Image (cartoon, rainbow, N blue to C red):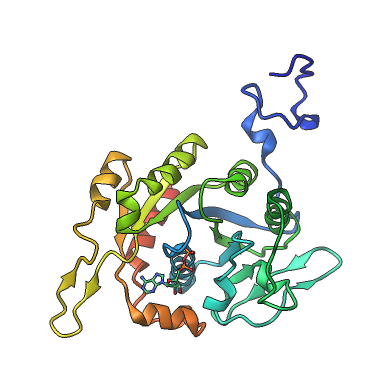
Length: 277
Ligand code: ADP
């Protein structure tokens, strides 16, 4: 606590132990209606966090939930491409209108704001955090049952701000078998626990490949340790997702909503059962 503490958290930026955690939460746009928020996190980039987020959103929309994706991965946004979204977000006098995919998922991402998608976002952390918060406060999200946030990878400044500012109902942690060995995933799990956000599920991506001839599962990186990790952290929903060229193709061609067999559909049911209580 600061020496000259006035006990008025609204005018103070310090994050001390006396601060009421709720005072850091930002209100969504007054015209928004968002029932549940799930953040998809990973200890590092390239493990399939965006793929997981997109598959979960596609599965939720398919199950009749009004679904949204907030792409908080400002410097590496890949959500619009996976959904085949080409148009730009529009604005009204009230706020920013998200783009809507063919299947009806509402999306806000840096890539639907940039004129040229290949333009790099070379910004400092505070500017990036500010933009993510604007996706929450200035975008009009309509009648959303479930919003997935594709978080930036790692445990830095931006994820911390998002955790503190947006009322998140739970997180899904994405990892790979090698990540498990390297303990990187532990950092993401510990961050969620430190922020008092329930961990709703664990996805081990690139867990195995399926032999195209006999269908046998081959664990390329050795036996999975994901079940033991889930047990250790009391996580009940676990998914093991294979390396599958059909997934890469669907993501690259913007067809993630049109997969015949969404590998995270059953996992989503287990996740939703925990937050519907
Ligand atoms: P992250 O968001 O963690 O940086 P992405 O979701 O963007 O990672 O995935 C990185 C790349 O790997 C993308 O090209 C994606 O299509 C591909 N990919 C992710 N998961 C799988 C998978 N299970 N099978 C095949 N390709 C995958």
